[in-house]
Amino acid sequence: MMTMVKSYSSGVCVRGFGFHDHRSNAGDGNKRSSYWKPPQATLIPNFHLPMRSFEVKNRTSTDDIKGLRLITAIKTPYLPDGRFDIEAYDDLVNTQIENGVEGIIVGGTTGEGQLMTWDEHIMLIGHTVNCFGGNVKVIGNTGSNSTREAIHASEQGFAVGMHAALHINPYYGKTSMDGLVSHFDGVLSMGPTIIYNVPSRTGQDIPPHVILTFAHNSNLAGVKECVGNDRIKQYTGNGIVAWSGNDDECHDARWSYGATGVISVASNLIPGLMHKLMFDGKNSTLNSKVRPLVDWLFKEPNPIGLNTALAQLGVVRPVFRLPYVPLQIEKRIEFVNLVNKMGREHFVGEKEVKVLEDDDFILLGRY
Image (cartoon, rainbow, N blue to C red; front, side, top):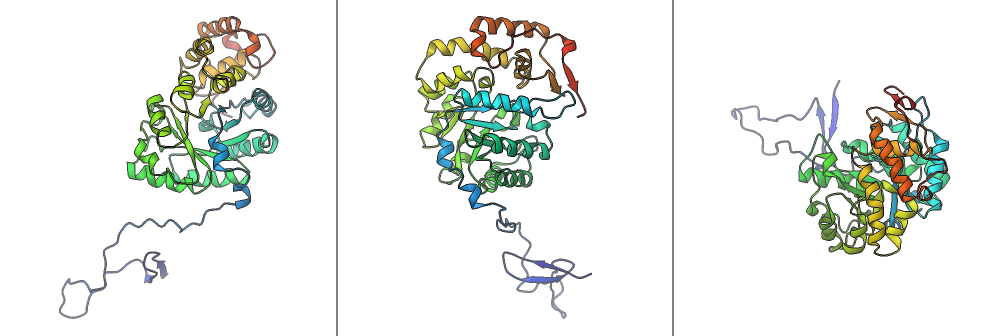
């Protein structure tokens, strides 16, 4: 069967099984005709038109996202069979809103988006928008190491009403600096976006010159930066909004380095105290008070500590999707002591904090 290949760079249709090297019929040997050109890699930005709605875009603006001071990377709780525990999730989100949290990251690393199917992921974003979108900004983690997948997930996320997207740089199968620019250029076309830099997880730093490429892009809300406060200062000094991605550095980032706020894990547990750190001015005493809890949270890779803590507080079932497993019993005892020292009233939930035994946890490899 004959095929037609359309060249979007030249507007020429070539019939046949591919591009042919046209040669003269007499005496030219291997001489190519004057109009033959070697094939070149061509980026075709408009080959697929973006599947986006201006009605959805107008629900919020990039500037609305830029002003958020406390954003919680929300935990995703599970039922014993591994499905989402929507009732527990709703309680968690309501508690965040009641304590002044302004934004929610849905399906981030903390929310275990990496363990979700995309159907689960988009459903949870849509549910969060439907139930809470009028009271808190919903930021869907629709990033991927595949640009195609990241664009498609963002299209779906914005279609169900999320206010902004969180995008990581391609991990494991790392690309070049030019590749990073092309990747983010593709996802930024979808709507308001926070770029997420966490080299400890991706294996690749996003250097400032890549971010500065998009400084004037109307959809760049800012950067969630985990490299440190000196990097945050580089961005804020160039007019780019930055959030600290490190709970242990966020107080200084906010009040000494120009960060707008924090995208926090600890606020899952102590949203009221984290609100004070971000809204009430410098408070070294309070920062020192929460620091032992923050250190405890990250003794093992996130979200292991958070999952264990929320289960011990009785606000989620002690169900883990593998490969995550609860902290060892010594760390569970340490958490109870931390809660009692800081004051149970500062933590989410109303049940007594308990030391859970190994047999209390459900670990799921299939769900």
